[in-house]
Amino acid sequence: MKVNKTQETEFTFEEAMMRLEELVGKLENGETSLDEALKLFEEGAQLSKLCSRRLTDAEQKITTLSGISGNENINKG
Amino acid sequence: MNASFIILSVSQLNTYVRSVLDADRRLSGVFVRGEISNFTNHYRSGHFYLTLKDENASIKAVMFKISAQRLKFMPYDGMKVIVIGRASIYDRDGQYQFYIEDMQPDGVGALHIAYEQLKEKLSLEGLFDEDKKRPLPKYPMRIGVVTSPTGAAIADIESILARRWPLAEIILYPVLVQGDVAPVQICKAIEYLNLNNCADVIIVGRGGGSIEELWAFNNENVARCVANSKIPVVSAVGHETDYTITDFASDLRAATPSAAAELVSPDITDTVAFVDGINYNMRTILNKKLADYKRRYEKAVSARALRVPMNIIEMKHLRLDFLNIKAIRAVKAVVNAKGYSFATLTAKLDSLSPLKVLARGYAIPSSQSGKIIMSEKTLSPGDDFNLQLNDGIINCKVLYKNS
Image (tube, rainbow over all chains, first blue to last red; front, side, top):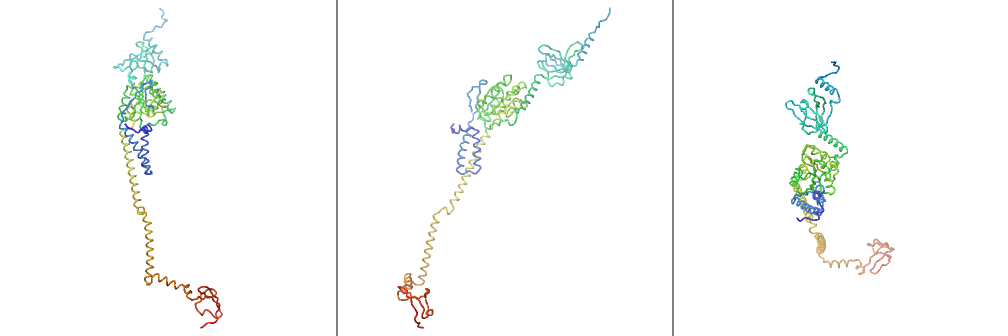
């Protein structure tokens, strides 16, 4: 799964979605120049591609911590 | 034989003892705590017969139908109860027993009181305040679950999240969910998840059960852990009608573990549609913008001035040339009309020049003031006047006129 590495580490899914909404809001605003609009669109297209991919490739993962001692190797955010 | 002793019959004895007991206020309307054994529900009469006991002693007891039928539960052997009634004896057989007027379960009653007291205490502290509740993340990527690893709760949560939001990793921290050790484990789980920042949201709970079975979730420490958790906590304890202190302390109560799974997750199909929608919107807006700009550009470019800008200057040149030609032609026309060539005219003009006239011997008379004298009438004998010759001016005087 080829994903833009920079964006993967920079954005959580939630941040990516928020940024997408922000971008489309700016575009809808109508006050952007053509140059700005193109830049916003490009970023938006990349982000939406990333999000779509994560949504369609999703496979549930379950991690069980070891109870009382709880020293499982987990994804520390 | 002298009868100075009072000799009672058995009936008299029993009656007397009974009256002694009945007369003692402290023995009526008295509360007694004990455990039931030898319980008999005498269906024919409707009366309950039982023994009440503690570790050291026991007493026979009866609850007559009139009181028994009001009970909302069925007593059983081993049940701990609190009864109210009176201690007396039954005349007939001298049996000392307790006449029960009302009965309530001891264990659960105490639990209910404890629950109400703790709820009041924590509420006054502000632990349940609305502004303490944390908002849930919209798109959680890691969902912590604190529950029994073998219960129905985790199975329900897993299956619902698999369908609805498989993106999220489920982090299960297994705990006991009832018994004395449960509160300690539940607290530890929540603290661990917080300390290591393992989850974006936590579900804590268990399947249905009696108040005793759910009791760990009415524990004060558990409530505090849940309230203090920086990671938002959704409580899911028992069934719809079960409310525990943890439910008040959590950031959101779910009626069941399944409901909790639905509350913490978005629907994946909705999210996909949302992203597609945004994509579509962006493209539409951009295309419209491009079309707008194209239109503006074309309009600007088609304006005549812009299309061939050099023509203006060329046009001006042309006009100038045209005017020149026109002027020349006009003059030529005039000249031709008179039948003269230009050269002839200039020659004639030249010959008519006053200076050329002077060269031919003519003179110009003028008064002292410089005014040219045109007529002899202007002058009289004796007047001074000037005479301009080709090469100079002579002062003259009029001698006489030839008129």
